[in-house]
Image 1 (cartoon, one colour):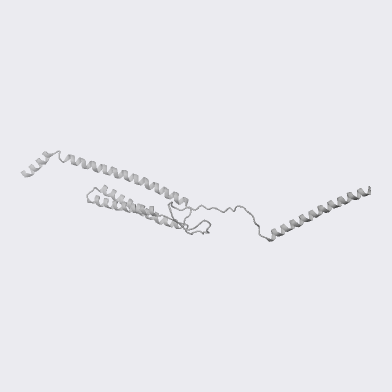
Image 2 (cartoon, one colour):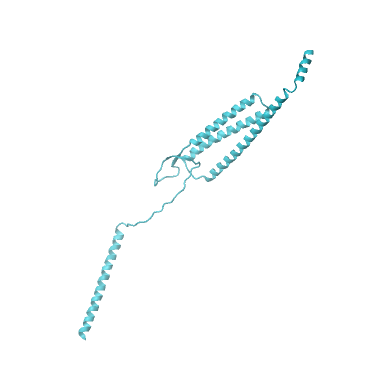
Length: 212
């Protein structure tokens, strides 16, 4: 009985010693991991989310040149892209052509027309000049916006409103011009109808003149 009890005690002590040794080994490993983590660099994988900022130019167009690349650091006022201003240049040329046509029309009307027709031609000339000035100013503002592309939604909406109003004004002017031409053609037709229909009156007038 004493021998069996001693064996059991020895086995229990051996088990405790083994468990204690394992605990000591785990503690040393954990301590080593903590020290390595504190002293060495931390290596990890993941995703870094950057802040995205939407940048829009005041006028739309084709990008002619990109001045920055992805990941470049920029500041407010830096030029990011160059837009192609060919369309604006063409619009300016069209406005200049319209102005020249209006001037030619005015000169033609001044050669022989009624006062109201002269007034209408002068108004058309003023409108063409205003459109030319507007196109030139739009080109200047577009170039300024290209050099400093900021999101200017309010100004863009205002510009769209002005464009819509200008289109309505053009349509009204075209209708007025068509009406003026119609009235002018009608007046010319009436004069041509009256001239050949009274040869007797013309003969009598010549005859009475010869009697005098």
